[in-house]
Length: 334
Image (tube, rainbow, N blue to C red):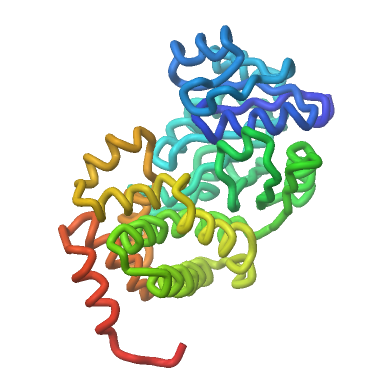
């Protein structure tokens, strides 16, 4: 069966997994949506909507909620995983024995694996082997706006250009445009680091530091993101695109971003745990700050902004002291 006619299995029924399932279905693909919470899946199947994460957005007829993982994967040429970074290896390990030899795997997961410092594609190749076509979906996208069908663009990077192109075609519509790339490292580094920087942007704005501080953080943060990506083997120009600068600006400047909201709540005096409880969804930037610091130190990459955000999150450094430390760094050419 061709990929255009075969179903796609979307694993992860949170806001982003549901939004991507909706977009694939609207573009004409048969979609099966699976998640860990059977009670939630039952409600979604009955109500034909994900009221927990995307209320009011009805499922098309070609989107089926499937609580049985084996049935969800059976006959699917493509699998899209949308789980937090700390759950990626577990999900890949669970599906590995259920995949056909020609099944292609993609993910919308962002962040380094904390225990190993590996990027998602490295984890996938370790679990699934290096011969299978794999891809990452990333870029400046909020799930709610994709779910609502608002105009959106994103990037799909793959180890197989044909796979990237077919996924882009399957996702694209008159209101959704997917661009392709071969730079999986750059796209994944951008997706990880921007979440850390968005916490910093929320902290800065929450403390009233102003527009000058925000744009300096975004711009110099982009330099840090690029520096780390290039050290890991990425292409520099990836970071001026949708998955780099585009995703960074979006996440740092709009309150739909959970990471930015984390920073705002921390600025208001809440602890990380209190802020996480209020947001009620995984805030990837908290764990990413630890992983980015680990990888940067291993590679001797200087990332002062990300380092100060780590210190705020894990070493009880006050945001004002962190800003003072940054402003007190030795002057040098840009």
